[in-house]
Amino acid sequence: MNLNVGRELTALGRLSYHELRLKFTELWGNDAGASSSRVWLIKRIAWRLQALVEGDLSERARQRAVEIANEADLRLLPPRRGRVGPVARAPASLLIRKKSRPRLRPGTILTRKYKGRMLHVRVLAKGFEFEGTLYPSLSAVAKTVSGSHCSGNLFFRVARKGGPS
Image 1 (cartoon, one colour):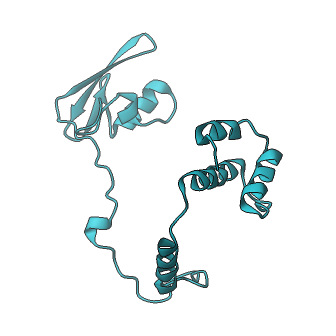
Image 2 (cartoon, one colour):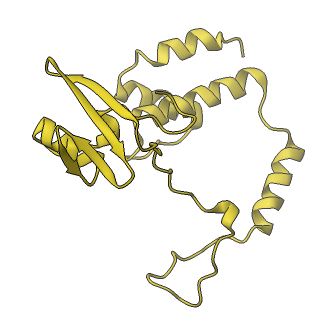
């Protein structure tokens, strides 16, 4: 088959959904199904065109794929809701750790210009001082300044350790 795959793939993007379904049927010999999306159709058609030009899987590769599929523990039923038995804990190395909060040293002064006004917040051992008032969190300061709830770290542009500032 003499096809320019690059040109064919470019042309796929210009086809309507109905034309893509017809092209799929032409290449695969069966209907794509009612729930197939435009992106899925383009991917499957592109794969088929490439396979026709460059060659498909060898018979040996196909047989090996069938063997692997037959040996696999396939789930035939969906999992039951709720716990069925004791739940094993995942190893600590696989657990997703929460991102740590940025650590600000007491005595640090955070500054930010907001609506033409320069803000200065002093970091204390237990809280934050802004305009002579003690606040329990940087978010409380940001709420006082902006009038709405927002992240204090984002408002004052406090970067995480090792992250962009």
